[in-house]
Image (cartoon, rainbow, N blue to C red):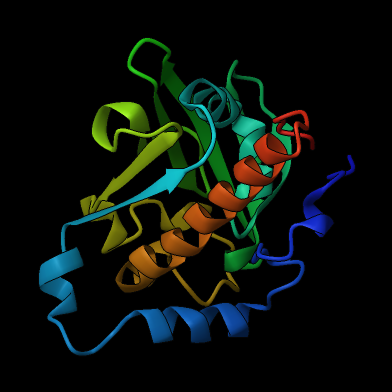
Length: 209
C-alpha cells in the first residue's frame, strides 16, 4: 500500500528516512544527564502534546490500528491474525522482531489503548495508554491534547517468553526503557505533524496506508 502524502511532511522521522544510528543519537541528545533520569522515568513514562486538529478526528485516526504504520518510528508490514482485532507488525527497531497489537477503544472517553507484545500474541503485556482531550477544555483553544502513558511492566526487565524470540536478536524491548520518553517524543511529533498537515490542507485524515 502507498502512503500517499508522508513524503511531503519534512518533519517526520521514520526508519525509512532516519537510520537507527541517527535515532539513537537523537535519543541520547534528548536523554539529558543533568537530571536523575531513573527517578523521572523509572516506573512510568508519560508525555503530552497539543495537536491543532479537532479531537474527534485525532481519536478516529488513533483508533485505527493501521495508523501505527504511519506515525510510529518502526512498526511496519501489518498483517491480520486468526484472532479478530489482533494484528502483527514487523518492529524494525528490533530487526527480525514481530510485534502483536490489539487496539481497545472507548469513543465516549476518547481513549485508545494499544495492547502489544514482542514475539508472541497470547499475552499482550506492553500497554500503550492514550487519551485525547479537547484542548478547548484545558487550554481554551481549538484542537486536541494527547496524553500517552506507559507503565514499566516487570517483563520489560526480563523476557518472559525467550523461546519465542529470534535467536540472533541483540536487544530486548526492556533494554530500550531508558530511551522510551525520547523515542516516544519523536513519535508524538510524527503524530502531530501528520494530523496537522492533513487538517490544515483539508486532506483525508487517514490512516492512508
